[in-house]
Image (cartoon, rainbow, N blue to C red; front, side, top):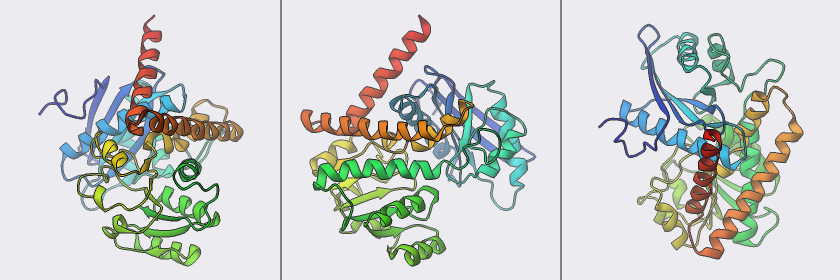
Length: 354
């Protein structure tokens, strides 16, 4: 199967396959749209079973970034990169320097930041070979790790969903099941929720991280597969994508699905299945845009925390409007969000050509 026939190919403007034999780099950069500006999205490093899975991730994630950035009203397009983690020992700094050279070859059409499996320190290695990188831990307008802001945006959006689905304006007594709770975003989200009075049920591959959350917040730890079966008010996916699928949807007892993971729905029609079950679903790329908003402040060259906070408030409003339209029209929230995003991107594309 070629890229053009791939089911996740969505008229991407560019797809770059980059390799470096010396460092073991195997990377794919997907540039979905530059209608609003240079494509921006994080770099993910993961142990992919094959290049087919890596390509699928790059294509889906880059499309999601286009939707995320346009829904957050940011002057950037959508892109994403994935690195197939080398087996065994490897020189991490050299690997990311090689990735930096790949980013530079796109001449500014793609701006990278960190994502799953990648740190701000890795971005400093990338920075040695390209200026088209953000999420840096140092520098005049450095924004650092975007995870805390992503978590704050998810927390805010979750409260919007809770008010609609549970009729509560606070989180006291609300039970939240968090998948990927010990990750960068998940751990910050756990803190927000616990301080607001929520009860936490958590799982993650990082056992030590789970124990820390249990000690700090009194969270209940469950097995990786058991998280779907919990009697929770909210299910918060904060790990990898495609976890809402035919095998899991019937097991979820929560009235709300709202989390930080990208591409939570295995297929677009899972949104209709969620709605049939009376579950409120927060479209992931609307809910988790806090990180890219934070990064945008760095791209602009004049980082302003107040501007970031204002954008987070805007995300709450956008999510509320999507959920209201979904309820009014009886259509899945993900379908409505996709329609709005595509329409906005097309308007930007036409204006750019005019």
